[in-house]
Length: 212
Image 1 (cartoon, rainbow, N blue to C red):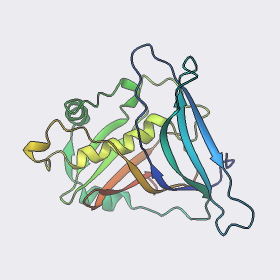
Image 2 (image 1 turned 90 degrees about the horizontal axis):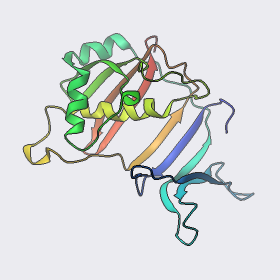
Image 3 (image 1 turned 90 degrees about the vertical axis):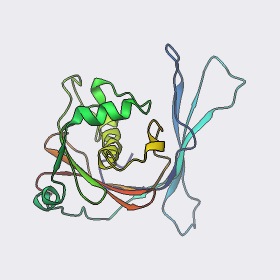
């Protein structure tokens, strides 16, 4: 859509997850509405909807809304060494996946990107990313969908020992994005992810290479 140039998503809300029963199929559409001429904003609004083509009388389901625009932002440079010093407690990836499964988030082999994980002392985590063996190719994807999902999974690693007992088994899913800046396509190699909690229900997530 933006021909590989940096872009920004803002005020993204996920009203409803796209849940499919075994054997069920739904058509998914991205609907983009450009701002009217004369508007002070260059952003376009978007929606992601789905519908069952066999049920023409039913209303489409709304799964995401937000705004999107080109971005002139420069990617921040992160120090992997500093993050490794702050996140020094190793966590086995299988521990994260087993913990998520207890909350009804069962991840298949193409969603398991982490080769190694570490937790920090202040609600943060660092993950080393490797393309899953079960995923034959990421060709044609600037950012593979299950890799983006893995970035959200890492929040679970940061929270592994912080969950109160009455929260065990609770299913936690992202419901909004304040902003997401896409600086450019990745080759899905030599990647790291870092997450840090910045408010009670707010996290900052960075996907980057070992060189920053």
